[in-house]
Length: 236
Image (tube, rainbow, N blue to C red):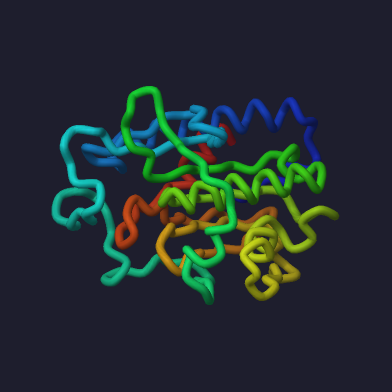
């Protein structure tokens, strides 16, 4: 199903769809995409971060510092199969250099399990003011600073507070060169791998175009493919 023009509906309609899509994504992740010891929760608050979907790693004696192998865990190794997106951007500087200036954010969950990734589906409120854009950028970079990978799905075109989209705002905060969306595809999906330097996998899209599966990193070297099209269609 092609991507809808969500600027043409009232806020309540999008909010209802937004909540449903979160549920479908969580169900897909827990329905086999995430193998043990990973699992997903929807709309949980972790510290100052309020993501749409959390992917967590159970605190059951596993070595969190080690990247798991690919055998039997459903994950894809970047070295063997790089994510299929239009553009991959690696930051010029080491993450420690430009994230050191940011305030420390301790992210926890009531279950004491370790958060490894976030999925954020952008809403109009995230772009409504300059402060809202700054808050969103801070949320993404604060998560990355804690070693948490982030997938951002933005079905809304750039506005006056993010003239080239939210990914450009993230790059600006990092002191990176300007990023410009293609003129014919003004929406974007971006998967951030929280390694150093930070790597972003970008798929520009537009109203009427089908979704592309996006990578969701669970470690610095392994990811799963998130079925955006299939979950989006469940409420289409």
